[in-house]
Length: 354
Image (cartoon, rainbow, N blue to C red):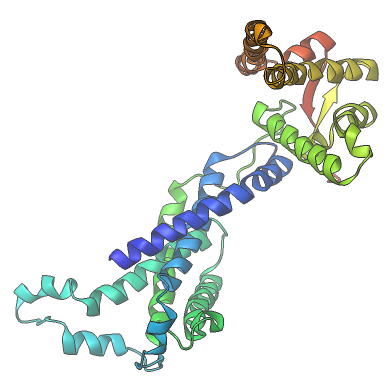
């Protein structure tokens, strides 16, 4: 049991690394496809990834020292079907005529190992039916292939990194794991009717959430960083290009285009005004940073005044956060520079051709 828990801990750690890398791309795809984030779909999708990573972790980890593996002399594979039944009959304390042995038999390794192999792939059948809408035949094939990949990784001595396999290639595992998936499929057939429909779509709306706008802004920041780092001397004007020139021409920044949103305004002058005013949020942060750096070079008798200026601009830098809170509570979701410029962010609704 301790070995399984250790493997699961490694799997969870790997999952959070994957989540960190894939979260923003996933949200971009969801916003482009559905115009919103379905949190139940989000949970089901990433819980499937978590399960898959942990399943592989449990078949690979913990990794033994190479020196110990080199000394192993046991069998590398078992190709005899139902060997686990024979092992249970021969070595477990189970006696059908003595009920006192039944509980002890359930705690014996000859039962626990096959039982855990059954549980290992039971969630796979649930996901294949509920998340991916696979048929019984497709579930059988996919679960068998996944289980086969477990066994082949073990048989290959972790792709040749070890001098020999450190775990047994077992045909019984193929059968038990596949059976576990089919049981999970059956459970999903029964209970999926009580779960939310993942394919249910919501009527599209032009309203844009602040989270969708924030992700678009992150995309713009990444582009500014890339252009500023790789395409000098143009990179010196990357902020002006991404946040000023592009939206003036296309009515949206690159990030907004990617998230299928745009700036709605009566004319391009108002768009230019909106973008110019939005730079005010950055100006407060830049001013606070300037006075922070200045404190290392000015005379001592000026430090007090400089410190007050730092506090002033740091305090003012919190105003955009307050503005976001106000926008979140309002019906229009407009920020201060959008209210002044009489502009708003709207979603680009899909057409029938799309």
